[in-house]
Image (tube, rainbow, N blue to C red; front, side, top):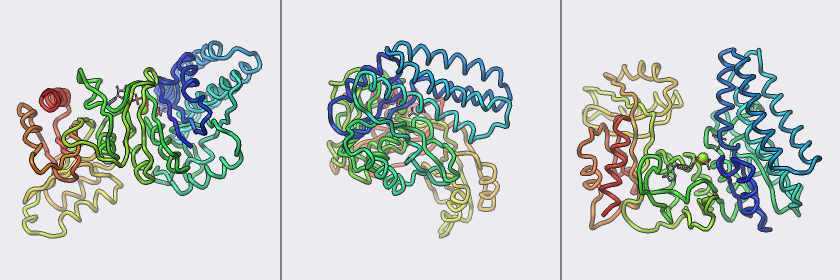
Length: 438
Ligand code: ADP
Ligand code: ASP
Ligand code: MG
């Protein structure tokens, strides 16, 4: 059985939905994971922001215009009265649920419940379209099996047992449709896998059913060697290892949610990235094969904060790093990048919710400096090569850019460079010109 995931643009209009249908209707057993139609989750975030601010009127206006958009989609996508009426009823109920938060105390759980509606609507519409054109399919409610723990981490064993129980009810079905992104937390509330999380849903479901393959269908022909939104003349990479793809996803290649690769790697399931607009294009295959040597791609992750702890006592001291890391651990704050010198340690964090408390505690160990608005530029590939080093090429490319931190050798797949965010574009272009155009 395969898992196929289609992103927001791929289901972004009635025409695109019909196109998706031609890609999934091949008679093979599969679970199709869908995102919300493009733009919807952003609108739902905006509606939630109005509710937070107590501006129910502005929320109501936005809800109405989004509902009208969906009514237009239904009219264009579906032709028979019975199916159309069904669609209007389902979509109307979802919008009424969003309206029910007006003039009430609004919190994160309310917001998560609202954000889930985009995927619930898109999957219902796609399922009804298949019903109308006579392609048998079953809509699975992702909330019946996608479970996360109190830290928002998916519980794979529970997802596995739940989804298998659900699937066993439909032994003869070949086409299943379900929502990406959404899940349930230990409080039995609707939660999500964070923005872009449908990719992660797809590999989690793939791992849970030991799929033969996970296909992620999007609006570009695979993972490119650099960020196509910033750099011209990027090209798709035919093959990446799980480790290389994981580094790229984690360090900013927007095409994949940061955690997408992990479940696939654990269960050794190949992940294919394909373009819905150009289905014949080869795309990218991510697998356990390590193909080719050298630098393959560059990505950048924004929004980082660098923390430097300087202590006169680090000289020959053991236990210093443990004390530093313990503070971050106690505040559940992951560290992305680390560099050390004899008297100081610099590290970067993404999550700054507890930065004030962390800084206060670190002060007991030494002086603390904080630099905000930092970007990690990550150079990825198979960087073990006895005959050649790669660091010189990278640093040569960045010679006009002030570099804050460098990390090399943590794994054989990654060189990470920290720069102020204002240099990101310049750094990505310089690396492209120097590393790939020879
Ligand atoms: P979807 O809605 O299908 O999940 P996304 O917008 O999340 O699609 O991801 C696809 C987009 O990722 C592409 O349109 C592209 O602009 C962007 N992107 C950023 N970095 C890369 C990269 N290295 N390779 C390919 N696409 C990238
Ligand atoms: N709809 C969600 C988002 O926009 C999840 C996804 O598209 O992957 O973030
Ligand atoms: Mg995405």
